[in-house]
Length: 325
Ligand code: FES
Image (cartoon, rainbow, N blue to C red; front, side, top):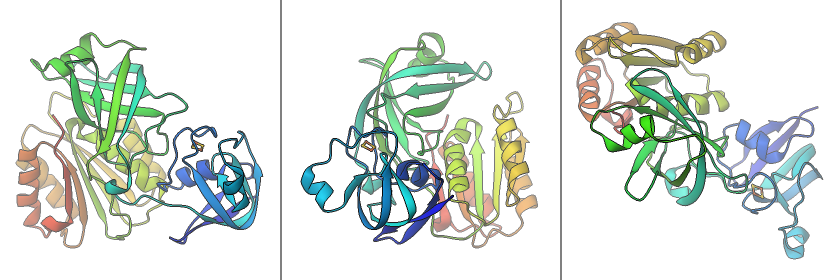
């Protein structure tokens, strides 16, 4: 049996499955609710029950004071809905709504896709997850000397398991260290989030995603978030790689293309930016009114604005993430 939850004052609604925590259901729906530990210990997911009934699920809410309980306070990670409920809870809509956090995490997995590309997975402690909006960055501090701001490639619905996709640049000490010396279990400091390469959620316009190489990382985070929000407008993904590189997550893109009617994926392999953009121009047709998200080096972003501007793409409807090698 499902129940409907409405969050006040935004009047945003989502459904929960029987026995599912209010927090898990809100995150599954792509909502940026405040949370930290998901297990009742940090108190950050506190909301207030206005109408309806809830029941305990999973964890205890010992961190709530008697006064908080008396005015309807509850922890969303510790309660499930019994029928429809109305809650008072604050949502984050842009980067300024989320505070900078500093966490100590561990490397969970290092997976090389190929000689130049690597997937780095970080796991935070259970009691301290990273809250961020899809498309944002965080700073990774590997040791006293090596640190870098990187786009987060995973979904904000899981702030404990963070993913980054890195391109190896010869002579760059940070990426050389990650490729050659960083080990599973190593400690890293995570500091963030930052950046505003985030979805404009209230715009029903068709969406154009352009990923250049490992620019697929932040674009993937936006795709995951679009799917959570169940957006229905056309979404076109173009992922461009050099001729000697591969689309390392092609299987994922094809699966999303197969499963969602409004989503199309086109892999492009070329060493020439103008050739890739000509193909995009030919396939999309007029882009007037579209919203575009481009994760590519700054020079490529400029080319995109110039060439795609010829077919109607308006600069003020474009967001770009230049933190891509
Ligand atoms: S108490 Fe930490 S997320 Fe609920």
